[in-house]
Length: 151
Image (tube, rainbow, N blue to C red; front, side):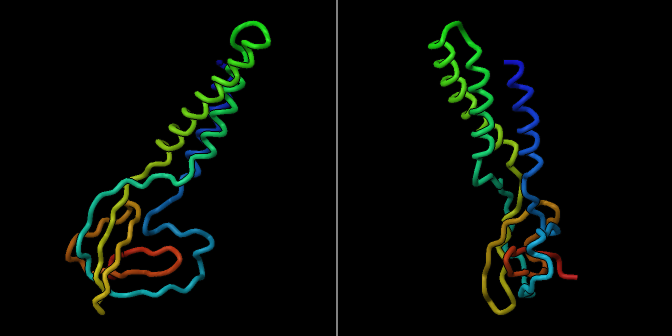
């Protein structure tokens, strides 16, 4: 069991380090040098939200493998090792899924903005920039939409 912790912990920390950055100042490489439309707008409302992962397969897989390895060391005899491996894999997969889900959660804000032309949009992004209702801003509409302060 102790060996499985040494296998799972680094893998789970690596998965947590891979959490996407979702702030208004964060750009992916594919978003650099891409043209986006920018519209002056006003923030209509703001609410705090929690952003969760869409895919916990890495945590499920790593947890299942580690749990299977750890479970196979339980008991004596072939059937005990087999049932231990199966039970350990199931428990490990469940725990790995839950662990990745909790490590990937981030806080964010959902902004409802109205452009000067009257269109209304909803944009969810990280907490690096807090805008308030009534504030003038820019709505950047592209592959990764965002709302930024109007400078």
